[in-house]
Image (cartoon, rainbow, N blue to C red; front, side, top):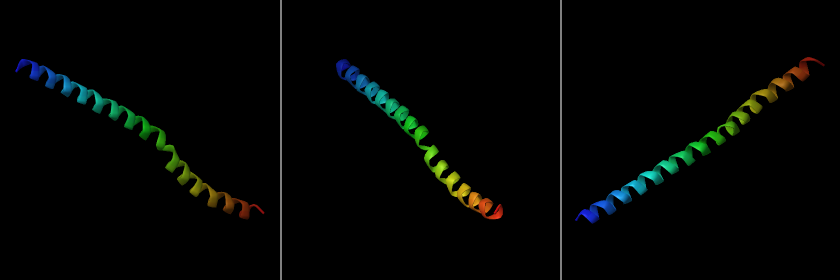
Length: 58
């Protein structure tokens, strides 16, 4: 019975380690993806402003 509990504890620790590893990887992916939508929004705002500036300075 004690051996089964030890095996269960070891399995639980392995699962906990795996979940922690996955969380770390997800946070890393999320951190590297945020600039893309921000860059697209910035480009979308800057393009009409630059066009308007070009038209007004002629």
